[in-house]
Length: 179
Image (cartoon, rainbow, N blue to C red; front, side):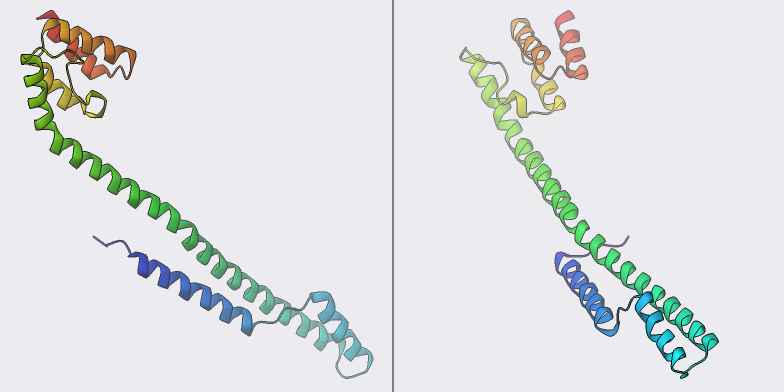
């Protein structure tokens, strides 16, 4: 499996592409076909070349010019695509890292929060039955439902119905309330 290029490699590749584009521009010349035709027509009028040679030369130069222009455009397209990819890759990387950090934080806090909930319920402290409910995943909430009374289950079900209304969690709550 190929690894993704690092930011330094991406930057270096983009800089090399830009430099290659600059070099290609420095080596090329730009002259309109009309101006070229005008110069060649003048040479024909002066008798320095034949009309056939002039037309052949203009045709070859135009063909080469088109090829060079197409090469430059393709180089520019490659540079632009590399430049456009950088923000997308950065956004994906940051998003992935943030998601991973959130998962690790929720997982690390899961067991202590579950213990706090049990202690709070045992001490009959009022409040919502599950601490940090909105940050928990469905499996985490489902595990905590086992310790709840019917009144607490109804409270969780009503809250879930008014907010996210996750189908799997609603089925689990309904099933526990029927038992």
